[in-house]
Every structure is written in structure tokens, then in C-alpha cells.
Length: 109
Ligand code: FES
Image (cartoon, rainbow, N blue to C red; front, side, top):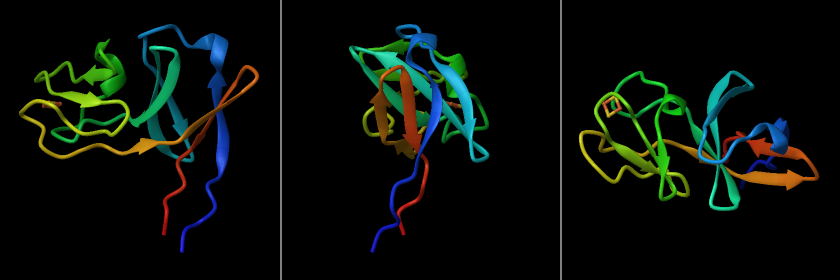
């Protein structure tokens, strides 16, 4: 059984600059929105290695880099592609409706 995904407006599409992460809070969850390669991704904003905001890192090749120790996370899957982080961070579904970026941080149950 899965809970119905509840999408909430996270930002305006026109507010997102290419490859420049935007940190938002959705229902108390810190989320980094990233517009890159023609798509928008939503990834949990805290590195899985330590309490560092991923939105302060750089974006390249659909990856976001943690500025502290340099681990990178795939924006599509949340998986780390380099040490020292070994655990993935959550990623969330995104919908674009007009100029609205909608994100669902609802957990499946
Ligand atoms: S805090 Fe992100 S890699 Fe160490």
C-alpha cells in the first residue's frame, strides 16, 4: 500500500537558475531544488555524511557536490558516487505545472 503522493508548490520555475541549487523547506523537510539539463530535481538538502547543506555545493553532470568533503550525489537517485559518503540521500518526485514547481515529500508507506 502506498500513500497518495501529495504535491506542494515549492518554487516558481522562473526562480530557478540553471545549475544553482535553491534550498526550500517543505513540511519541515529541507529540500534542494536543482534545475539542470532541462529538468528539475528535488533532493534532501542534508549530506548523508555529516550535517552539511547540499544546496551550497556545485552542480555538474546531474550530480550535486557536498562542499565539505567532496562527495557527489546523483540528482536522479540520491546515490553517492564518491567517498566519503556511502549512504544515499532521499530524492523526491517533481512536477512542473506552468511556472509552478511541485514536489512531493510524502513518504510511501
Ligand atoms: S559532509 Fe558531505 S561528504 Fe562529508
